[in-house]
Image (cartoon, rainbow, N blue to C red; front, side, top):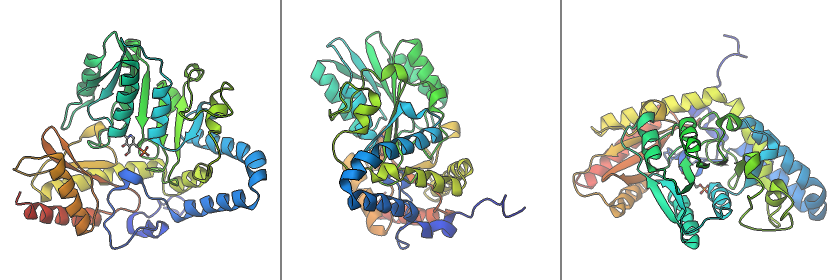
Length: 392
Ligand SMILES: Cc1ncc(COP(=O)(O)O)c(C=O)c1O
C-alpha cells in the first residue's frame, strides 16, 4: 500500500488535533461536538478580519464570503447553495420553519415521541398559538427496524396533519431513521416533512436534493466538527416563498437568502470557517471516517453491554455513530434518577447522556475520529462502578 492510499491514523494518533482534556474520557461527541484546533484557527482569522475593518467587512466581504461558505457546505450535503442558508443551530432552524406555518385550529403537527425536547417544545408552542394540536408517532424501541418505524409514522398521520417533524437521527435513542421511506410515506399522504437533522452532517452521508424532503435542518458543530453555532436550513425551492427567519430584518420580502443571510449584526465566523471543517473531515477519511465511526460505536456498545450484562438499543441500518446500552437498574427509573446517574458518571471522569425510554434507563455513547476502543473500556468500568454505587 502506498502512503497515498493508506487510510489516515485515527484514535490516539489524531487526538492532539482537538483541545480535549486527556484526563477526561470523551465519549459524548453527540451532544455538543468538539471543534479541532485548525477550525478554531480559521474562525479566529475571520474574527480578526472582521475586527480590523468592521465597516468594510460587513458591507464588502461578508456577503460573498457567506455565500461561498454556503455553497461549499451545500456541495458537502448534496444540495444546491441557493437552497441553503446558515442558522445558529438546529433549534433555530426548526423554529424558523415552525413559525412560518400558517396553522388553523383544525390542524395537527406530527412529532415523534423520541423527538428532541427543545424542538418538540417549539412544535407545541406554535401549535398552541394557533389553537392547533401537536400529535405524536410512537417510535418502537428498543431495536426497531425500518418497517416498524415507518408503520408507526404512517399510522399517526391523519387528514388534519399539516406537517411532520422527523428526526434524522434521534437524540436520546440514537436511531438512524429510514428518512427516504418516511418522506415518501408522508408525501403520499400529502404531508410536508421538516427533517431535524441535528446529528446528520458528518455522521451519515447526505444527499438532500435526492432525499426530497421539504426542509432539512442540520448542525455542523456536532459531527462535522465545525465551530459552535454553525447550523443550516435547507429548503426545497417551492417551500422558500413562505419561509422566514424568526428574526425579521432588512431582507424581509426579498427572498429566502436575503432574509436568512442577514438577521442583524452578528459574528458569522462559525459559518465562515465551515470549509475548514469540511477539509478536516475529508483529511480524516470523509466517508471512510463515517463508516469507521459507526463500526467503532457498534463495537463499543457491544463491549459496554457485555460488561454490564445488558443489551443494546439499536441494530442494523438504524445504528449510527452513537451506541445505546441499557443500564440494568432494578429500582424504578425516573428522570431524576437518570440525572443522578449522569452526574455520577461526570464525577467519575466521563460524560455519557442517560435517558429514560419506555421505563428503562439507557446510556448513549458516541464514536468520533479521536476515540479508540480503550475509551469504552474505561467507560464500561466507570458505568459498572456507578451502578454498584446505585445498588442496582
Ligand atoms: C435531534 C436533535 N435536534 C436538535 C438538537 C438541538 O441542537 P442545537 O442545540 O445545536 O440547536 C439536538 C441536540 O442534541 C438534537 O439531538
